[in-house]
Length: 155
Length: 138
Image (cartoon, rainbow over all chains, first blue to last red; front, side, top):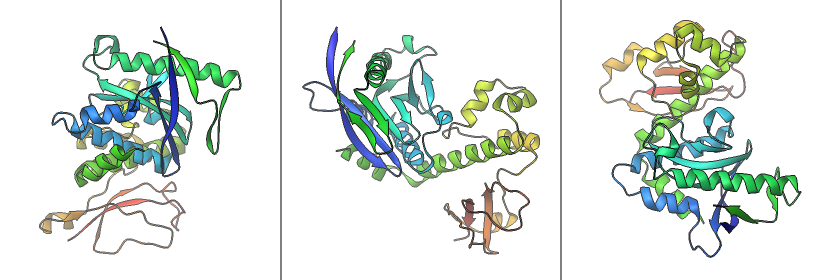
């Protein structure tokens, strides 16, 4: 099923430009949905804090590949010290498109019912995103993301 | 926009922030040493009898290093990752903080040096971008 999504600017953290996305008609973007779900959960609150602290470090150091975990064609934070995964796509060293995330409860993400839908969505966004870049509808540059911020993803 | 991000950041206890900052500093230090020695992650993994994926975790910026792991990496790379001065044990309740030193800064004698990620180990003068984590006596 194809669904329309909107890419929206999230924040600038140091030198790092962060974007996120939301489904058409949704009132909350995927990244804030992730924070809302876990920030006050006593089991996962510290994991959320680690992710935010890691993003702040990426803002100072740049989003080096080694700071990000490969998740098929997408990426995720953090690599270690947490059961949570926040999915993302790296545009370049100073530009990330964040998505949502969930609890990675198993070795294979396919066996993690909480994280897997977010993994699939982020990879669907990546596929659509890559097509838009190839078609020239979107491009990253030093000032961030430029072009059509509405995409369709197959989820 | 992103008020929740700010809310989480403001609620993050200092020890969590220190943990992540120090883990990033150590991972960058290891990466810099590998590059300076012309080594790759797989070389370090091989020398330590570890999987390359384990070394990838060390370089991720969010790994919770054990002292034993740091000691093993230090022994292979033959350069300090973390330095601790004995004075630490004589100061009750030292306050730990991180500080980035520029080339014009030098650690004070009372500073307890924990970590030095300068690129040039043997350079006489500190280079720009030199960063140090120090443990200061309260």
